[in-house]
Image 1 (cartoon, helix red, strand yellow):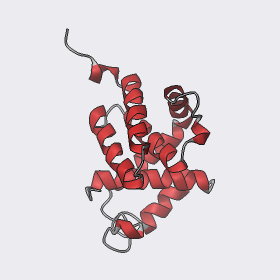
Image 2: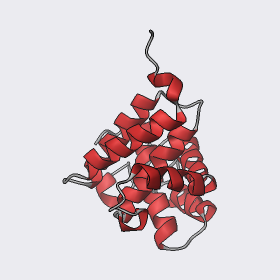
Image 3: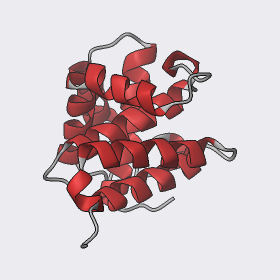
Length: 159
């Protein structure tokens, strides 16, 4: 996986959303913990992802993704449920994959962010870092559906 700051921010956001959900911890607490111990200028180490350090991550982007994902979680979750097959309720999805789809959905929610295709490709790369099975393909399909809902103008073709 790339060590680009924006990519590392997305990895950290997925990890933070997972941690917040699993530990029933507030997003602001998790953001603070990540900034103090795992990312940003004061984080120990040199960005060794194997040790959970993402020192080079873009902190403002990381925090914005986590905040948007939690502030818009009900809406994003409803969109995820609608995009998932009926046989796969959101609660059945692996919690890391669920966090990844929420983070991707949050970034697609941000109309001033990168193009939808860039966001989808970034989260596909992140998914490949976490999973070796079919999960990246599932995340790609779900995020593509969300992108078409949240940013339809980016997918309109000239007639």
